[in-house]
Length: 154
Image 1 (cartoon, rainbow, N blue to C red):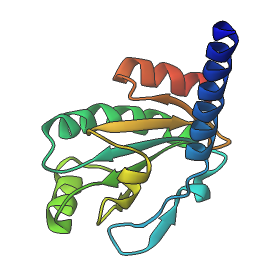
Image 2: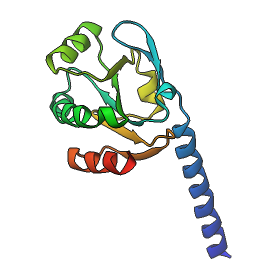
Image 3: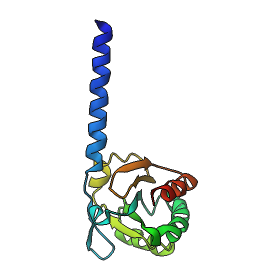
Image 4: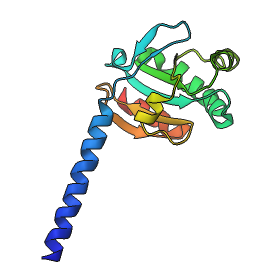
C-alpha cells in the first residue's frame, strides 16, 4: 500500500512539473526595445530564438555578449535570433552597454523585473533556447553547446 501511495505521489509531482514546463513555454513576452517600440516574443515564431536575460552591470553577462555576438553574426541569416532582455535599473546604462558591446540583436527592457520573475530567473546571465515552434529545448548552455544546439535546430 505504501508503495502505491509513493508511486501515485511521484506521478502527481511529474504531472505538475510537466504542466509547469508547458505553461512556461506559453508565457508571452512583450517588452519595449531601445526606441520604446514593443517587441513580442511570439513575433519571432518560426525562428530559433535564444532568450537572454542580462544586465549592463553584470560582468559575466558582458563577457557572454562577446560569444553571443560571434554566434549571432554566424547564424542570424539562417533563422537564428536573440531576444535580449535587460534587467538593468537604468536605461542609460543599458543603452551604453549595447553600444559598447556592439550588440546587434533584439534588445528589450524588463523595467520592473516582471518577466524575470515569471520565468523564475534567479541569476544572470540566464538563457533559454527555443525551437522554431517556440518550445524551450535548452537552458543556460555554454558557448560551444549553444552553437551545436543552434546548428541542429536550424
